[in-house]
Figure 1 (cartoon, rainbow, N blue to C red):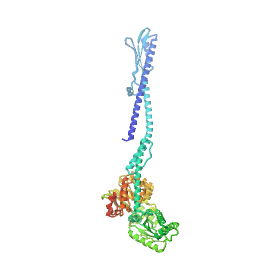
Figure 2: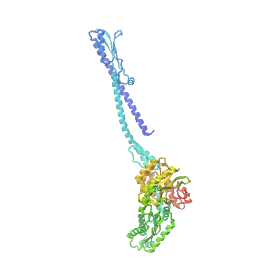
Figure 3: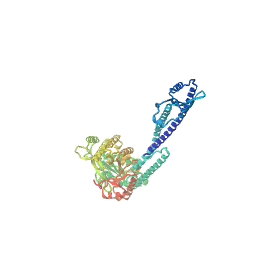
Figure 4: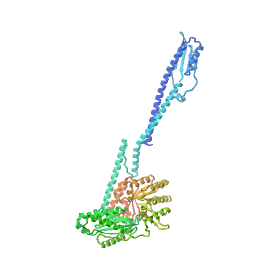
Length: 637
């Protein structure tokens, strides 16, 4: 039985006891008063009638009977009897009817016992007889019954008013208590939220303690995230510029060209300071560091304009930019070169030359060493041109290359004719058990054409705001697969989609139509997208959790400084980006980082999955690091 039900039961019981007690006291007091009044009336009426009879000049039996009968006929008497001294009944009138307004049970429960009135009738000095008078009690019962009804109505009205006020008070009391219960439930669901302190002293202490615990947990996560971020930066970032170092950049590059959801084309730019040693001698070590930092800041500014781009310092004089999705490589190279030149000339105008830049396009699935070799060749060509020059390979348009307008027409036709499907890849626990099948969207640009992967069309879908329709098709395919096959399924949702209310409403309807399948469905959003649309992702997570779905973050680990914000989301799992997994079995520092990352996630009740594991060596190190599952070629299909 709930606390509030017990409180209501106690209140109702107390009100009932008060009502019964007050009712009995009031009715019994009224009955006593009425009995007293009836007794006095009996005595007064008996003496009055006896006096009237005694003063009658003619006291023959007929005259006496007529007087008594006239008195009885007034209707206020139960009994009038005149008894002679020798105990003979001279006259008797008794009412035999039962016309009381009070119910019989009430009369039986509260009987009236009034003393009868007795007086002597005299004939001069001779006693004529003894007169007994009993007044009718139906009027007393009527007053007693009506008083009981009024008292009951008063108590009922009071009970209703008290119940209404009590409901409001209980609701006000229940609100902070329900919030405390919700907070405890949220903690059990790995959502660490804080509450405003209520006014009730007892609940205030509980909420304060819960908030303090949540605050400590959040601070623990924040401290651990900051420590891991510092460790990650120390291991994988250049100490002078703060950019990614060569190892991290190459891991990210490898991950990008292997992921099918990444854009099928992108740009790789190499920037080399022309004469770093000469610059160092000319402007000094400190100023040279500032120049390097200026190049780094400019590179990061360029990357900020392109999602999931990364800049790095490969070695002393070499910088690199990876920009997925870029297609017009010469235009991009010219723009970056111009931005760099303006930034450096503004602060160091006396240097004879600054840099050279080489740029190439890469395609998904290409070999990394081939891309690096092509970029080196472009850089060498730029160096041969002279100071502060750039050179880029001409755009290598693929056969499926289309204009933006053509892509809009293609995607609209695909959605209309439903030429989409899901391709599934397994996610397994580290002991080989199935976790779920991850579904990736495929579409046919033309009837009976080849099936394109997400990276081929998703950038254009984002540009034309068609991702909600595509993701809705993904959800529908997922539910169809769940109905047809056993096991769990995970799907990916674009960052642009989670903020679309139309998609959210249609997704909610699909979840409501398939309640038995929701517990087997997992939805994932990339870490970059989740933090870019954090409020929308938080709301989406609540909706999914309400229907029993699982929620995860894909390509996790790239924004550790923002990880404390996921403490309120209630995530079920994280898929760590392959850039952190690649070569970890040979890097003790990376192992320490990944171990701390897994411990922090486990402290929040979140499972950790390694993405894109390539070989048995990478797979073998995962249990020691704390991972719970893995995806990739080493896991199989």
